[in-house]
Length: 73
Picture (cartoon, rainbow, N blue to C red):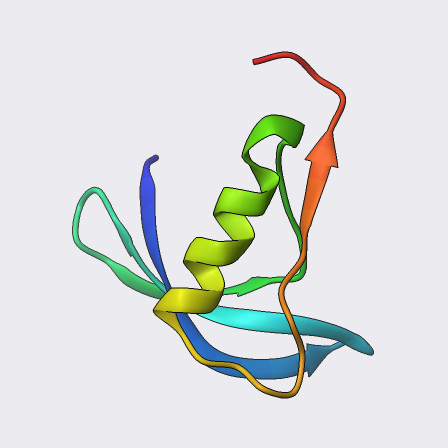
């Protein structure tokens, strides 16, 4: 299954963990909501990822942070 997600500016707590809510849609067209607590990106891309997410949606209570990975892509 493939899932396409788009970030929103909605933040929530899920089991005590802050999450950002994303709208999703499967490749067959089924809509869903995705609760994202963490996204891991390669170290070389982490700043660009954070800046893109902050630019796209304005969030003033919890700031998203990309967690750099040591894995090579």
